[in-house]
Length: 232
Length: 253
Image 1 (tube, one colour):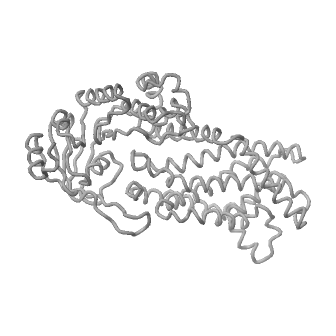
Image 2 (tube, chains in turn blue, red):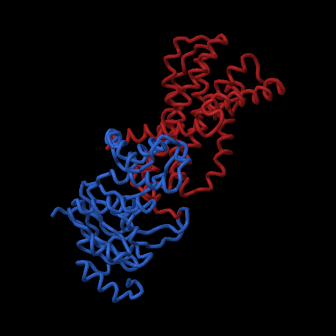
Image 3 (cartoon, each protein chain N blue to C red):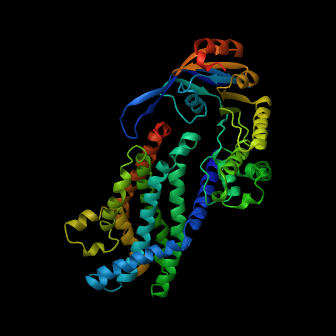
């Protein structure tokens, strides 16, 4: 299988304050991983272990401050629900803006606008300013746009089942469908069942360091043996 | 990638203009009302009360204020652009140049409309179009470069030096008075006039007024003198942005 992403002893430092200089803290200290085409990698670890930071490194949002990072010429998308909607703009205009920010070309978005409108179940509200939407409507619109993007590597930070009960089922199905369609996936989750069902390998991170990498069964057992509180 | 970036810049600019129209009762009319109100205020103080305006002061002031409004808005909006969008920078991989670029483009489109109206008003006031108008694109390009350079530099620094937000208005007010917006370079005594002749905004504004009011072609040597500092400013803005860009997603929320 083709190699898509490779991290070797990567570390990422954040600045504790908004200023030049200031103290740094290392959210990621020493993480190594390899992701191949079609692989479905789960990432587990306690809160604050650096899982979300790792996703943002793979997405290309953060550059590591030490170690090596290599990515093939592929698109990596972090599934986000609301990329800065503009309240005074209509749902349609926000869908276009959001799609462009996610890397879609304008003609691709135009071709999918009907589908986005139908999927978000917004009806005539699609032409109204987003300022008049409920929180659920905003999340539905965000999800409907995000799910249209078809990246080479899909990055998911916890399962994003949004909206009311019906839409939660629908959005969860859409994500499962995407994962099983052969897209390479990196999934961060605290849910063992989801990791075991959806992933073919798991990386366990502890305090910003890679602790163990392997098949789901082995890594999940080792994780729960070391962190009993995380046992479901 | 390049075409996608252009589409993103263009649609974001359209979105910004649409949003601005909806944010207030007068909407786009504020583009005209704001410089008009400033003109009345300065005309009252400098011409009516202090008596330092002189003949033809109103068109002189109007040109200065319309161009200053463009420069100031561009610098302020571009300067705040990355700082305002830090939440987005943390969520999605986007070239940060997008944000100040959209701000500069939005203000330039607004200025384009206001400037055309200014030309019409000047014509009605007895200052018809003349051959020197051909030099206007170059002069406006110079002012745009100055706005872009200052705006990009501020945009690059503001996420790391947020205190800049509190001094930017004061700095711009000082720059306005050092740029001959409300008085002519010829009225400045020596040796200050020699120093001010190095201010690119002053030189460009003087040249635009010469074209519009007297039909005079710009002074080539003065333009050559300010070309280098202008380009250096724009380059400093671009390089600063490029150098600091990896730090923005790592700044504390």
